[in-house]
Length: 137
Image (spheres, rainbow, N blue to C red):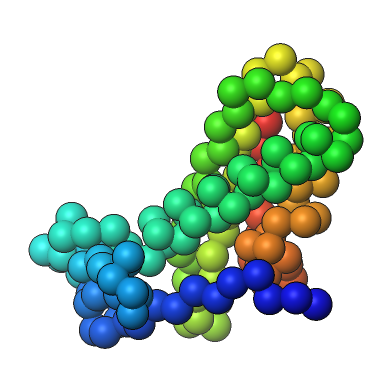
């Protein structure tokens, strides 16, 4: 295995605090939808995760389509991330990945999405503990 790059972020104040990277590229004050008055202050961790997952998975969709020899046009990927409280008082994520692949029929689009789900690092990291639903839009 070869490390391609490493990202680092530092959290202060947990879900209602800040997230920063040492190089200054990321500097975010978080909002917290679970804390009245802070919900619109900034993005919450799930929103940041949804953005990162959608971008990563979108790249995997393009790679999968190319590998399968299936042309895709102007594609989009939308990640919907939910924070869920489980029956034991803990928390989990649920994710739905929606993809639009213009010019690709439903069966081919689903084949591309499933192949992408097997190679996307975010999908791999979530396997086993998080339900991820794939939806062709």
